[in-house]
Length: 97
Image 1 (cartoon, one colour):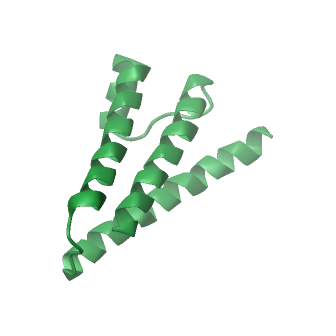
Image 2 (tube, helix red, strand yellow):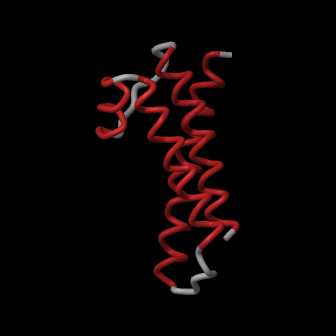
């Protein structure tokens, strides 16, 4: 399931860029759950994000190819949201360079 590998990759890119932005106080985490994890400890935040990517890779490896329309909508929405977040990361990166 290529799409799950893609979402896992987008999640890791978001992790790296968000961690840099938060560590240097360039951005704020707007997701209340992830913000709480960051405030608890950055390693908790990183651990959860990595765990989510590993879970997606596991699912991609072991799930059969679902053809349900709802599955395509769900994964398409996830990709769209991650791309939007990465565009926002790109904006602040351009501003600091």
